[in-house]
Amino acid sequence: MTTEQVWIIAAGAVALVALALSALALSALALRRARRAESQAAALAVRVAVLESPVTAAPQPVVDDAPATFVITGMGADEAPAVEVPVARPVDGRLFADIVARESVVMAASWTHGLRRALSPASRNRIRFEVRQETRRATRQRRAETKQALREFRARERADLGRDLNRDVGEDVA
Image (tube, rainbow, N blue to C red; front, top):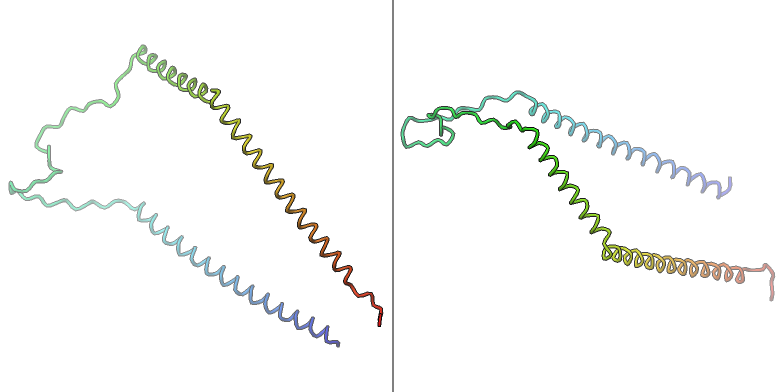
């Protein structure tokens, strides 16, 4: 067995040990993440259970009959219940048509104003200027990247050429 073979076997053994250790570390990390996820899921389950549980009655505040006590929640308890005002009232057909027409006119006017503003000459000129400026910037950037790539390519060619010239020819000149 040559020394090269011994070195290859040793390198293979070291690589195998490194692979085993990394697999062990990854499994430990995965186990830790799984435990953390399970604990978070359990905590969330507890929170959901608390939120979905029936509400227990709040303890009633103790109200003394003394006149010095002022309870804000007891205000209006002595009065008769007020007549309930209906939240919605019926709307006749003409009023409904008027409301719908007004909404449509307002929406159409806002659309028209937005389009007129977007298509105004000032807006078009600003957009044209910004597009032209961005195109020029992209062209300059592309030109700079091309020059840099050519520099690197030529430097590599010079390095390869220099390496070829310095190579030993294998003859003994002396």
